[in-house]
Image 1 (cartoon, rainbow, N blue to C red):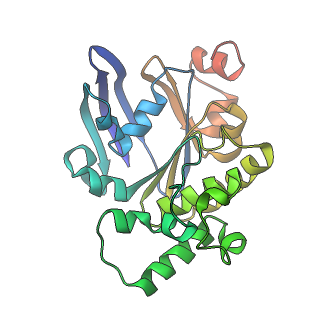
Image 2: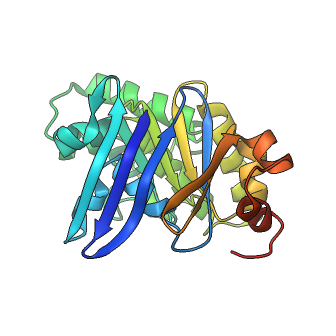
Length: 247
């Protein structure tokens, strides 16, 4: 996936300015910056969720497999770019099984029960949740712990076999133990998918990402391998953010 010259406005307010950013297959990309810098806006654009906000205008390109996602049907985009939010949000009236395969049913995709069973098990295994829930598939997803619910949401996103998985501060509402399990899962998932992670947690970005982008006031200030950006940042603003002088 590659972002090219992306500008975003909310009414008269410009939230992103000429953002150019490549995301690589089988890598984890952290997007950091102080509140209001545009990182969540960027993430929402990657699967067209920005369109849910009235008055939003976008210019530029977001390329995936040679196609501009901004010109495709949103439903096609969202099959290719799964998203996991800050707080676990399993569908409260659905079972664990139904949560995982919800994308197929909600989109009217006809598929045999035996295939749904396979997809559910495979997705739950990828999310490191299968062994914990395989005997509880017909219980509601909301009965699970917070960390398990977040892994269920990851399984739900993976079930559609996306090329890119978007994570919007996925551990901010979790305890340290659950956070550690999600970070381990992120490391495992990059063998099969490109991951883009928005995080306020600088230490987390350092632990799990291969590449890091630093954003400030709607602009991409610096981007590179995490090791290099964290040890020898090229921009003074990046250095000041990493050392806690603002943010």
